[in-house]
Length: 92
Image (tube, rainbow, N blue to C red):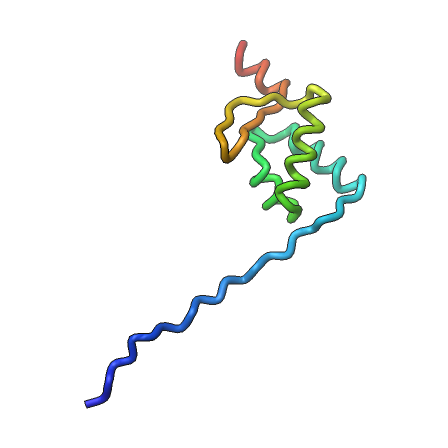
């Protein structure tokens, strides 16, 4: 009889390389697309445009200060935003 091997092969997780630097063209396209979305989160922006979550947070906070999006809900892990125009239509 042969002995059973109890060791398993380690799972290989592929690490994604996300962009750190963002040019103005990419920022403007992200801002235009964000205003069309129903729900805006840093994770959704990061995954869609292959940028880091910290960059997505900067873009979102910039748009919030400009008054184009508003904070809907937050907890210690995530903040959820929505565009102002869609929020007004929903309230009416």
